[in-house]
Structures are given as structure tokens and as C-alpha cells.
Image 1 (cartoon, rainbow, N blue to C red):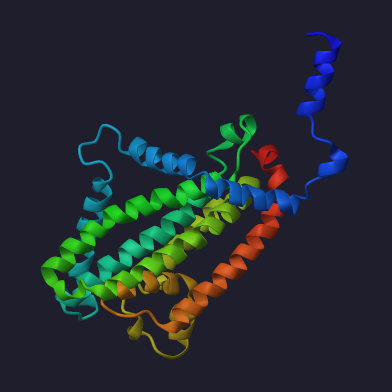
Image 2: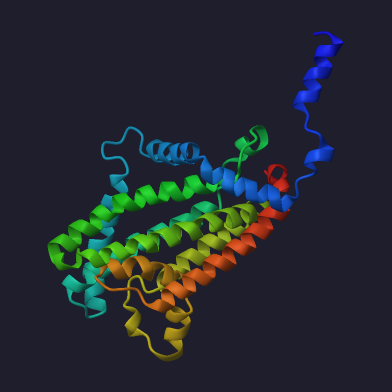
Length: 287
């Protein structure tokens, strides 16, 4: 290539800094989030292929998770109905609807800790929007959630079919809000766990304890006074679960649940955007 060709290529391939200016870290983070969201073909395929990879060469695929959930719900439900003095026809639908909502929320949180750690090879060698990994994680867990809905449909269809009605459609906005929150949780936890690897163990322990102190196995009305205030009313995980579980039980979720989750959504995204803007450039080095 002659000298004129090199000059021409350089002039067309390198942007004029005086015209474009340096992009701020905040702008870069915003472009990452928006650009990643628009790449539906990429994160959609990543999420789907990960589900297929996990259950490769199995006969039932993701339905193995549903079968495990069904066995767990029936076993714990029979015991729990006796412990809490509940009618089995009332308790099993309560338990299965709570479990599928809880699995959606808790799995997103747990898997967020390994979001950037497991993708270190991509982070070091490929230039792409980091948010794609978060979108793929939420999409993957939504697919599993749809499979788990089969367990709910079978148990409720046998024990209490009247719960399957138009009110159940209110679970859709609840799932959407959980997914929106799941994205910022994935990014925030992913960055903290990438930088400080001990955070993964802390998050795992907190989720295990939260499963017991959140009204999943026991009715929220069984607590009163200050205990109800601490473990129910001020428990953000309860409100996320309630937005999905309530409609599946034929109930409209309380306004307080929507208010709490919307406040969490705004606050969580604001914090995540600030952290992502500040530390995004360091993610590749931390990996």
C-alpha cells in the first residue's frame, strides 16, 4: 500500500477528536445498557443456549427442574400443612406459587455473583456490551420460570382450579418488575463479586437465611406486631414474591407491594448506573 493509501485509510478510520470529543464514563455506561438491550438476538440466544447446555443429553431437559420442584412442593407441603394447621387444598397452591416466584428472584441474585467471574474470557478478549450478560441471565431464568409454571398449573388444576382466572394475569406486571430489578441486581452484584470474591459467599448465605424468614413456607398473617413489621412489611423479597404469588392465588397484590418494589427499582437502578458508570472501565482488568 502506498503512502497516499495509508493516509486515506487513517483519515477515514480514525474519528476527529475535536469534533466528537471524549465520551464520559456515564455516557459510555448508558450506551452499554441501551446497546445491550437492543441486541435481543445476542442475549436471547445466549440465554436459550445456556438452558440447552445445562440439560444437554437429558430426556426431559429443563423439565427436570420442574419435576424436582413438584416433588419438593408436595413433600414439604404435606408436612407444612400439618405444622401450620392449614388445609392441604389451600396450602399447596400457596406453597407452589410462592416457590416459583422465590426461585425466580433468588436464582437471579445467586447467579448474578458469577455473572462477570464466569465470563472473564469474553471480558478480556472481546469488546461488547457487558449488560448483554445481565439481560441473558434474566432471560434464562425467565425461561425456567415458564417451565415451573407447569407445576403450578397441575397442582392448582387438581386442588383448586378456580384460582386459574383473569386475576392470574396480574402476575405478568409482577414478573416484568422482577425482571427489571433482576437486571440491575445482576450488574451490581456481578461487579462487586468480580472485585471482591468473598461477596459471593455472603450473598449465598443471606439468600439461604432469607428463604426461611420470608413468608414462603408460612403464611404472612401468622406474624403480628413488630415481628410482622420486620419480616413481612419491610422485607423487600416478600413484596417481590407477593407481586407474583398474589395473582396466582386469585388475589390482587397490595398497593404497598407495588410501592416498595417501584422504590427499589428506582433506587437500585440509580445506584447501579452510578457504580457502572464509574467502574465499567475497570471490569476487564478485575477479571
